[in-house]
Image (cartoon, rainbow over the protein chains, first blue to last red):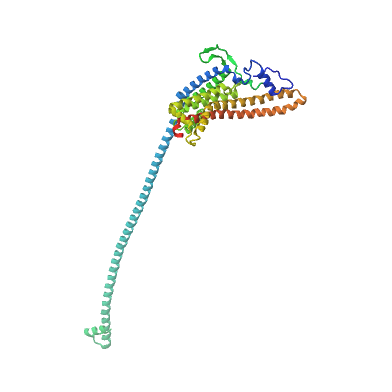
Amino acid sequence: MASTHTIDAVPPSVERDLHAETATPGDHGSGGLPQSQFEHWAGQIGYLLILFAVLYLLVSKVFAPRLRKVMDERADTISTAVATARQVQAEAADQAAQAQAEVVKARADARATAAAAKARVTEEANARQAAEEAVVNARIAEAEAAIGKTRDAAMSNVSTIASDAAAAMVERLTGKGATAAELAAVKGAA
Amino acid sequence: MADPIHQFQIQKVIDLPDVTLPVLGTVDLAITNSHIAMTAAFVAIVGFLAAVTSNAQVVPGRLQAAGEGVFGLIDNLADSIIGHDGRKYFPFVFTIFLLILGMNLLGLFLTFTATSQLAITATFALITFGLVLVVGFAKNGLGFFKLFWPMGAPLLLRPVVGLIEFVSFLLRPITLALRLFGNMLGGHVALKIFAGFVVSLGLLGLGGGVGLLAFPVAALSLGMVVALTALEFLVAFLQAFVFAVLTCIYLNDVVNLDHAH
């Protein structure tokens, strides 16, 4: 890489150096760029063509198919996973709807059961109340009848007592007993 | 000061006997520094691809992801430019891209850049041009020449435009070769010149006295070398990519000749 020039205390300009180098006969062939030394072309071109052909074969037969296979596999895996996820999601949505329907049904059932129980209880209570009322009414009627009887008895005793008392008062005042007909008349007048 | 052109000199490493071929005349079979640089790039590419694909997993590791990135870059390029036939031409474009990229990048690490040799870039250009011609005639027969017959132009102008198209078609391999060659040549010459400044100005500064003023300039040159090296990495990738893009475009011209014109 380094040129044969020794480095002076004052370095020559780049151009001068360049000219000095390129002017050296035999070093740079035609005096232009080293790239234009055509004696080196054939070897490079031939070798590059060989390398190119080998690499082309390797890429087209080995590397590209391998990578494509993996990439296709990946695309397959991803699409399968996405499809599976979609399916699972649909299933989950179905199940959610089903559960929702079940909840609604259960709620309706519970409501119906509650209503039925309430109706039954109300009915039973009404029936019991009615029965008890009937019993109480019967006892009231019974008691009223007993009271009536007692009063009737008492009332009949009262008239007997009154006629007795009247007969006794009449007897004491008049000295003779009043007839039953008179007593009856008095009673009616009283 | 080092000669900035000397780095492009072909040097024989192992001299093999010359052979005389019927058409080419005497061919020097010597193994040169150019051969070594090409071989190094080739080995690096094959090693990289082998490492990427030998144990390829559905869930890629780092190296495989890098390999698939490069693969996908050219695959998408071929697909988007050439269309559904792109897959067929992918190995060719990928090969040419990898070889140029490998040689460009290795040129930044080694002392010799294969793609700064006109012989190499011209070979790449002619391989592409040759493939375009072969595919063009194989797919379209003599209809290939419709490529130069611009249906969009007014009838009177068609021969003129066609002639221009034809000349520009013939110039394609030259522009392909010179673009890559010029970029590599210029970049490495600039790097060498600035690096040479660092050394010669540094030695001047060591002399003391007024020469001390050379130190800041040497430091500036060193900064330029660093910046240019970064730029050269960009150029190394970009030129390989440009070559691949143009290869795809030229192939598309002849592959989809009926649809485009």
